[in-house]
Image (cartoon, rainbow, N blue to C red):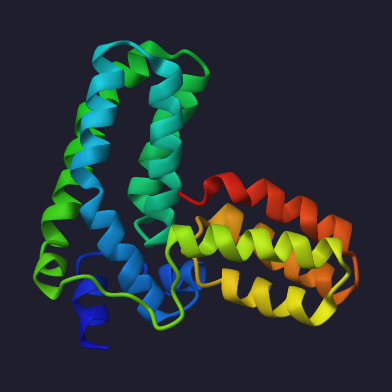
Length: 199
């Protein structure tokens, strides 16, 4: 895909991104969301930093760490991880020194990704929206409760179409493995864990 070549050229680890998202189409879709959410995230970080609300700041940079990792922006992901750890450990001097440079780096990456704006929204063929994902998850939990093997497998497969972050995507894979082993209660617990992240 021609899109991938210029994305590689701007320094993103496309192989890692495709590995996390589960395919080229899903990767391009994830890049689009990463690009689109920049202004909202920038406002959040700026507000929490300005208000010295380091708990909310930590939650936001934690999400940005995961999002950057998911698109293969490994250096930026490590930078957000440093800020997350600084907030967790109350290292205010580190937060004050590095927040602006990290956010500038984030902004530069967004500038490099600006051709995505002209492409419009790219959605993978099997990608599902949050409303559909919640509905599928509800039906999946009911199927697991009924020990309905075939329906559970089908719905769990459909749920992989939702663009979860890496940690949640791994839990969903684990739940699918549990369904294969007829471990329905364990699978249901994992689905309940990832359910709140469908937003």
